[in-house]
Picture (cartoon, rainbow, N blue to C red):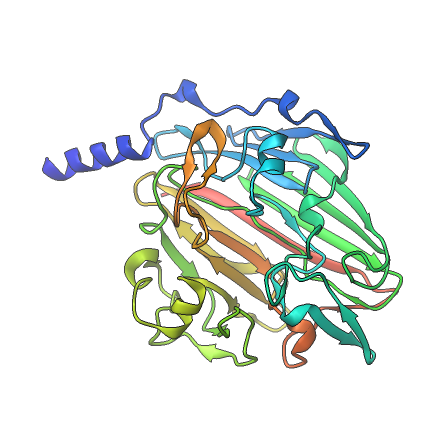
Amino acid sequence: MKLHLFALLLAIVLGSCNSKNSKPTISPEAFNVQLNGQQVELFTLKNKNGLELTVTNYGGRIVSLLVPDRSGILADIVLGYDSLSGYLKAKEQYFGAAIGRYGNRIANGSFKIDNIDYKLAINNTPNSLHGGIKGFSSKVWNAVKNSENEVEFTLISPDMDEGYPGELKVMMIYRLTDKNEVTILYSASSNKPTVINLTNHTYFNLHGAGNGDILDHVLYLNANSYTPVNSTLIPTGAVESVKGTPFDFTTPTIIGARINETNEQLSYGLGYDHNFVLNKTVGEKVSLGATLYDPLSGRFMQVFTNEPGIQFYCGNFLKGKEIGKKNKTYNYRSALCLETQHFPDSPNHPEFPTALLKPGEIYSSACVYRFSIR
């Protein structure tokens, strides 16, 4: 009886006992803005099970995602803002954003292709992060709603955009299926040799956005190894086993269980902010990369991808200064990201899976977030 009472009180604190009539709504008018001569819009996708995905062509962002708990109560489980002005005024945390041309970090903002040096914008001293100062997260994408459950975004990134060579043509499709899957499909081509690593930077909290931290979430990563980093979060080039370390999520583990252990890598990342090397079978295409479970709400998320890695970031740089949707504060470790990707700084590590895209080739990447109840 005492345990039941405690669980009920905790649910109230976390906001999981909201009325079914209190589901968050995002006003399309709050995004109906001309930005540098381009029209920003909001798009809502729904499936037959009640899930609702809202995206905007500003930064190709996921703005909200309504998912039911085991009682059928909907909650918005992703961080973001109620209006375009929120994204424009706040310090960039990449809430829900499409990331490119290169997700994650490139050391010292430089790399070589065919012995030609390329210099990128430095926006995460001393490195380049998430495509530079004006990466894909700050672009207004062209958008077409193909159906009630699919939006297609396209973008042309000109030659030497943020220092990257080649005119890059990008297509990104968001789809919400009746299998409760949020699918993100990327494709791209370039007229010059270039590097590319597209991903999505959605922050998840399965309690509901702004409802406590994620340290009680249970995480599984299908990864026997990871890429350790230096003090500026650039991979050293090594691929190390997770066995016997705080980075072992090969069995479902509570995120907060080992996050405060004395460990050099945890110190560098201020917690988890590392690339995990996904276990792959030869010839395998899209496969399971991770699962995330909230025992309180019963929400369960699976992540599938064709990418070789996944970045697990647990909101270490959220400081409670961001006031998000419904005036909720986004505090320290109040959300996490699971970013499907090629490895950070791959252009400078020939031993890593290549991120090189040549003319005549098609870059293709897929990420699927599948939701269910336990």
